[in-house]
Length: 127
Image 1: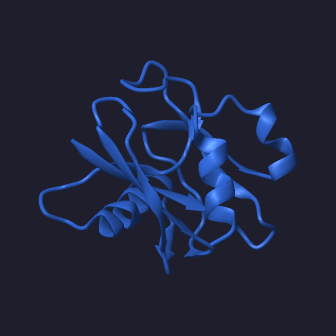
Image 2 (image 1 turned 180 degrees about the vertical axis):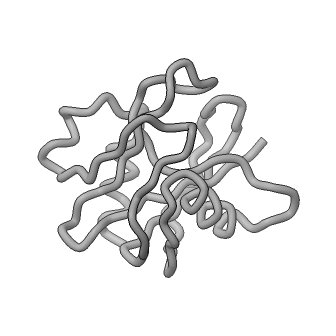
Image 3 (image 1 turned 135 degrees about the horizontal axis):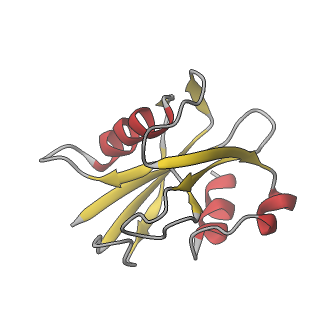
């Protein structure tokens, strides 16, 4: 199974992190990005857009491809990673998350984030 995530930055260069519900199938209680599995034959970019809307209530546009990560996230074999600084709306969480934060680079270490996320954030920050 394959999935897509969106790494979203605001105008202050803070990244959006969502706290996953415990016990969720993968990475319960950790902080991560909006994303999830692809529906049918939708593109991975469309998946990232849809999941961001469903999970955070944000309309994200102008996505840039960061890369494909061959690592398991739950039952996902590969994750397509996108980033954007273009979005509108106010964050409103769905049932899969309990909290959200806009986090500065300096404060990332204060969050228990999904392993490998810091490197993805740095790659996305430079696109």
